[in-house]
View 1 (cartoon, rainbow, N blue to C red):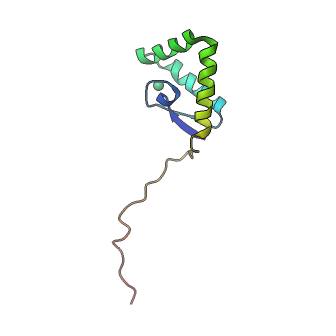
View 2 (view 1 turned 135 degrees about the horizontal axis):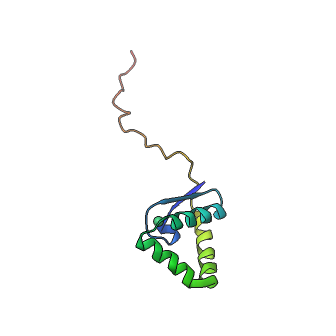
View 3 (view 1 turned 120 degrees about the vertical axis):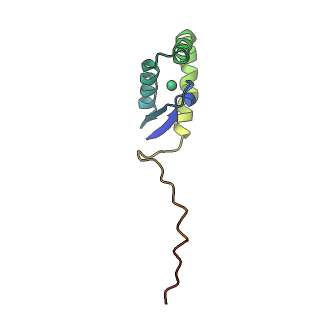
Length: 93
Ligand SMILES: [Zn+2]
């Protein structure tokens, strides 16, 4: 499973788009884009439509490579190790 933001896909917000494969990720990206009705997302959608198949192919080439090189993310968020680990250093007698 990998995560990128909408922005990293060429979108305009920080929503996290996930996918196990590039195909799944693209589908989720489209679902997100289609579910958003604000001006910024509508503009992204319009740009994609106006770009036509050539722009779509270019996007595909760039972004599938980007997705492939993105680090694997587990479903669970990365746990931060608490800093207060050194306080309890009473030597054993
Ligand atoms: Zn977005």
